[in-house]
Amino acid sequence: MSKNDYYQVLGLQKNASEDEIKKAYRRSAMKHHPDRNPDNKQAEEKFKEIKEAYEILSDPQKRAAYDQFGHAGVDPSMGGGAGGPGFSGFGDIGDIFESVFGGAGFRNGGGGGGGGNRAFRGGDLRYDLSLSLEEVVTGTEVKIRIPSHVVCSKCGGSGAKPGTSPKTCQRCDGHGQIRVTQGFFSVQQTCPSCRGAGKVITEPCRACRGSGRMQEHKTLSVKVPAGVDNGDRIRLSGEGEAGVNGGPAGDLYVQINVRSHNIFSREDNHLFCEVPISIVTAALGGELEAPTLKGRVVLKIPPETQTGKVFRIRNKGVKPVRGGAVGDLHCRVIVETPVNLTSHQKDLLKEFDASMGKKHSPKQNSWLDGVKKFFEDMKL
Image 1 (cartoon, rainbow, N blue to C red):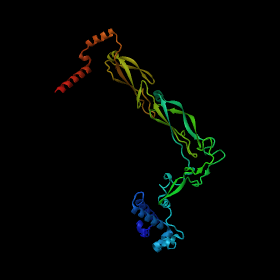
Image 2: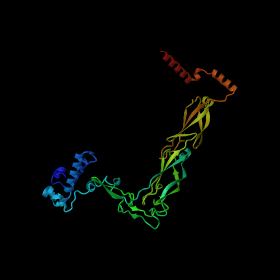
Image 3: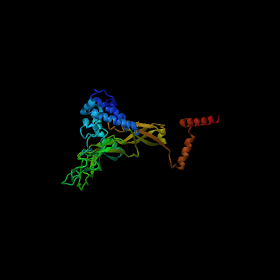
Image 4: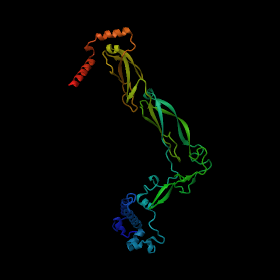
């Protein structure tokens, strides 16, 4: 090991406090850490030197011996020094990092301590519920049947055969984790024998095969409020998977899928539909019945109505699920061309067309004039 002055190695004065020593080590160790400097032998040696300096200066007895005798006071080859007989170096670097960094990042999952017998929350579940437009607009209540893991009734969730109980794992002594030394580091890993549970089941329950949970189907009642839309979710708290080791159950999320409607479509809180009308009604005007989700309404068609004209019927849409004004119903009229005409009807239409002048078809005439000008401009 290097014999440089330990205080200089950490960039400290001899009267530095314990807190200053710890902060200096933290800063220097992170800078020269091998993981941050791969294949850098110089950084690796510097890191060892920093570790050695901190090991001595962080211990009051070793620091006092170093301050009085220098390196000879802490060198085990010089008769033991401050470390006493059998002092074998600088201990486990994992212990040093735990004392300085609190152990964060050197334990399984980044947490502190073992995981034996810890309670875990059950997983969340999702159920896709298909509803009609009428059901989501007015609200409804439906029954659903879902598969789920529940606590085993035979073993009470312990996973052990009735009359027995799980035993403490001998490999990790019930902590759920073991320490593994890898080079300069000592890291904690999940115990492979008990898989972090801290206990081992020697006689598993036959009903659940040692898992502590069983799969069952349960029927739930889901209240769908009026106004929900496609993609909305309804949460049923505690209706998900059963927890582990007494942990709380997860939640069930009911995903709303609205089936397409043969008359209406929906955008936000408004409804839309198409209403076919005859050319006679479009030309002369009239009245017709239009459908809504709450019954029929009379739609008045003014004379000379063109196809695509939209009529808005107020408050015949959807009431928002979170409150607010009710949407509207938008009816788009489509002028329908007659089909399957008789010879007499065709003759009447030809006679009617012959009697038409430009003033009766203003849009058609302006369009034809525009097309004519377009082709004339192309010739230039």
